[in-house]
View 1 (cartoon, rainbow, N blue to C red):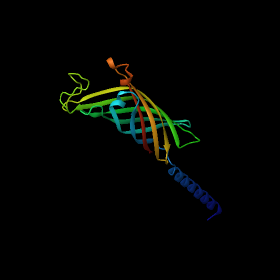
View 2: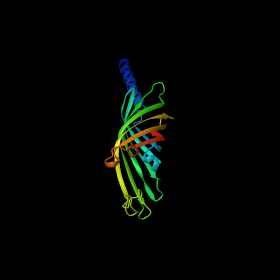
View 3: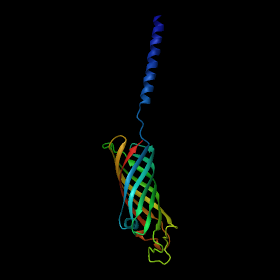
View 4: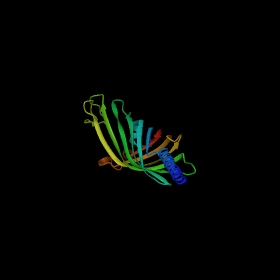
Amino acid sequence: MKPIAMKKLLILFIFINFQFGNAQNQDTVVLEPLFDIGLHYPLSTGDNFIANGYVGLIGADIRYQFTDTRLVSVKAAVAVDYFDYTFFDDVNGGAFVIKPEIIGEFNIVSIPKLKPYVSLGYSFFSVSLNTSTVGFDIINNPDPVIQPNDERFTDTQSGISYGFGVAYDITAQFFLEVSADFIKLDLDGDISGNRFNENIHTVSMGVGVRL
């Protein structure tokens, strides 16, 4: 084989190997997780109706990261908490707190595992209750709104919510988290303006995974 042909063949071989190696490097790049999925325990706090009459059982949330900068990662999220009604023994049921929100998670270069964040959203409080005793009167009312088992009392209220929290990465995939959330329900009628009935305060502790 002529030297010129050998030289061309060698250049072609080097070029093919470079492209193949580059493609392998691209295939092995670790993509940044876009989804966070978590489980947590919601604890109601403060002087309000949910702290007095409900006990948190479990909560779950999912987040999708749609923007990432050096300073902050922006995520769309939905959290759902379930609270068991405990104020009266003759009443059974509970309530869901559903929180669609936008989260801003701050990136700290010096402490990359620590991820503080703030949230803003519009939340829903949906309750479903019934009684085991016919004629039970929850507020000394001869015509109670909470009826026996054949008729459930259901109601949904909503309002602006905001919060803050911090996550700590145990590994690249798993993290621990603690957060505080505040909801102000938009109520009508006689109960409007009553902070006891309008406010929901919760503190949550949980674990999560990044996908």
